Image (cartoon, rainbow, N blue to C red; front, side, top):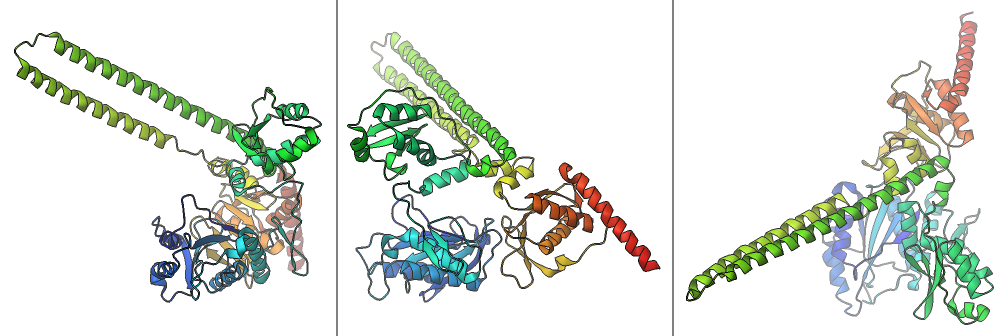
Length: 541
C-alpha cells in the first residue's frame, strides 16, 4: 500500500473542490466512484457546507483542508468496511481523530485507491490541528504499514519503516551523511520517463566523485567527465545535470559548501568542457534486455517528437513573421499612395479616404491575428505539452510482452496469444473455486479464491497478472480462463514459473506459443497423452 499527501499547485485547498473530486463531479466521471462515506458530518449531502461552516469558526487558519490518498496493490481489493478501518487508522496516526472527513474509493486505475479530505479545524475547540505535528509523510507511511498488518495485505518493503516477523513496525536508520531520499518530483519523473532523474544521478554519480575529490580542480574535472558541472549559486552550490539544476544538498547531507570548503579550501570556479549527458534507464529497465531496447527506441521517438515540435513551431513563427511583415509593407504602400496625391482643397474627401482605409487595414490586422492564433492553437493540440510516459508508450506497442515485462517486473504473467486454436484435453475445474469481481474498465477483473481476501490474479483483457505469490491451483485456474478466452497463451515470468505453466498447460490442453518453450511443452504434452492412454487401457481391462 502507498499513502501520500496530495500536493497543491496553487494556494490553499478548497473543501468544494476536494469533495466534488471525491464524488467524480469535477470531471463528470462519477462511474469511477466505488464507495463514499463521511465522518463527524451530520448529512453527507451537505458535507461541503458543513465543512466550510466549521472552517469559518477559525479565521486565523488560511488552509484548513488536508488531502491524502491511499492506494492498494493491483491484486488487493478492500471491502467498504476495510476502507472505513483504513481511514480510522490514518486519522489516528495523524492526530486528526474527531475531525470532519469525507472520503471515496475510486476504481478508475488498476489500483483501487481512496481519496481522503479532512477538515483540520477541531469541532470542539475550533483550533486548527497540525497533522502529526508536521511529520505528515512519516505518519502516513506508518499508517500504511498498520493497515497492511491489520487487514492482511502484502507488506510494502520500500520506505522508511520495516515490519518484523512478529508484526512490530520499526523505523529504518535515516542514513545521515550517506545521502537523502529522492523527492516526490524526482520519483514522478522516473515513473513517467523510466529514466534516472537528475536527483538520482546526483546521488549515485556525483556524490561519490565529490566525496573522493582531493581538490577543487579534481572535483570539477571528475564531474565534467560524467557530464556534470558544480556551480556557485547565491550562498550555496548546485549541480547542473543536463538542463536540470539540483541543489548540492540533494546529493547528500554531507555535501555542502561549508563542509567542502573546510576540506578543499575556498571555493574555486573552473571553466571545464562538459559533454552532453545522455539519459540512463532506471534499474527495472536495465534488468531486462528486451525492455532496455524498447526504452532506447522510446528515447529516440521522444527526441524525434520534440525536434519535430520545435521545428514545426519555428517554421510557423517564421511564416507568421513574414505574413505580418508583408501586411505591414502592403498597408504602408497603401498609405503612401494615398498621400502621394494632391488633396488641396479636398480635406473632407481625404478624411473620408483615410477613415475607410484605416478601418480596412485594422480589419486585416484583426483577421490575421485571429487566424494566426487559431493556427498556433491547432499546432499545440497536435503537439501536446508532454510526450506519453514510457508505460503508456509501451501499451500502444504491438508487442504486449514488453509492456508486461516492464509493468510487472518479476511477476508471472499470461498474455493472449491471438490464436483461437484449442487443443483437446480433459480440463480441471479449479476455476470454479474462484469468484470474479469487476472493477471498471481500467481496473480489470480480479479473481478471488473462495474464502480469500486478496485476488490471486487479475484479468486485464489481453493480460492475466498474478499476485506476488502463486501456486498450482491459481496457475491452473488462470490457464483455464486463458484457454476459454484465447485458446493459446504466451508465458512471461521466472524459470520456475514458466516450467510450472508448461506442465499445467500441457496437462490441461492449453496451447503455449512461446518458441523457446515449444519443445518442453510438446514433450510434456506427449507424456501426459501417453499416461492418459495407459490409464484408459488399464481401465478397459
